[in-house]
Image (tube, rainbow, N blue to C red; front, top):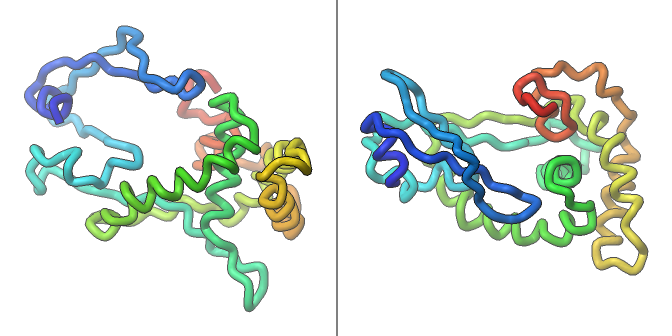
Length: 200
């Protein structure tokens, strides 16, 4: 709230960056100051939480709930759980950007789900708009990246059964070449090659 107040009052703040590999916030000298009539976008699991923006008038906020809600079913009786798409996204992104292997991501996913139950789901109904970030071709693209990571998990690991289940699930999809994916696609956040990031 203090940073929001300063920004909205035209003040400059030090902008931290979270280093996911080291697990801590870092200050690299980046500063942020809003110009007149600038829109401030707040992204993350706490974005809808009233406590984060309690000092900002409701008429000055527009809250968007973003979730990957899979539109596909395996058949007439078996739907694809949203969590399967989300864990596959996370496995690929965490490996590419955070140096985590698939085993670590799978074992940590229950904590992610608990965090959502506390910090996201209680506030999703308060959103002004909902945006579905799932793509119809996404699982075919993710397959190429997820399969080798899942196959690294050893039989002795407590993540092995989940890895086998996800590998079996991915068997329902044909691989889609990432060259077919536009550089401005949402899926590029996970597989890389986005036109929105300088380091891609």
